[in-house]
Image 1 (cartoon, rainbow, N blue to C red):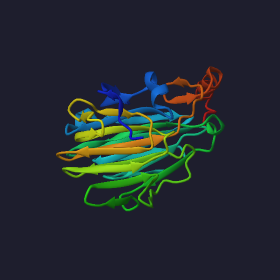
Image 2: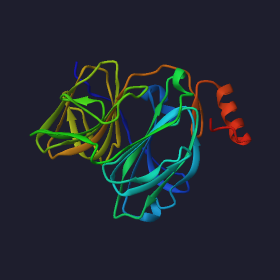
Image 3: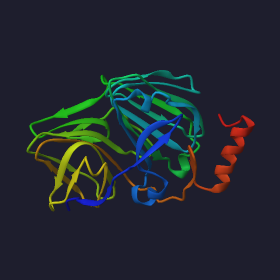
Image 4: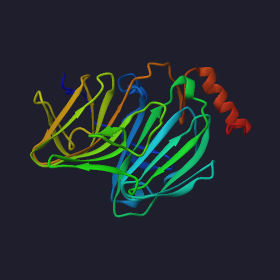
Length: 277
């Protein structure tokens, strides 16, 4: 069965970190719909004042954060001792697990364009050892044909596997560009939730449903084993997919656990200085 649009998300203009302006596509109120995903922020600005204050040092536990840049630069550091710069087509895949403290500081650029996705960790892996993956443009796997160009970050497309492997939820993360007048096709497990983050252009599905970047920033698809998306003038979107965890969620700011007791413990450990294991 071909997937079509289930729900459109216009996004909400928000501020986070030290005052970074962004478009929050989905968050806490949407968790049942987008499980195993938790939060999605989209940022696109040519004004450095919108983002330059960045995201100073802050904690995470119980999740993975995935930051992908299309344009711009972002310096990062964490309590594991990792540091570096995310450049265009780079991805920072961070497993917070039992606890990590990090910062992400955008650098002045002509344009800052990218997204941050929060991926929930299964209950059994909430307190796993923190880890960090740094994917550069050189690591990115790309498939291009007459119909589309697909940057594969995680998952498999036409026999090619992305550089991020061995994750706890085993999601799919593609950066897809459909060429004008062409169609993108992908066969997928019908159990996977599929969400599209629009980057530019408009798309059309097999039943005639459409989504346009000027109106919809995010699109949740129905269940099915086929994705078939066409674009008359060309388009670009990020495709996320993952199997729902269907587990209880206790969410407090940057920490997402399964029970209120676990959440209280996390904040108590933050106060006592025992958060990092």
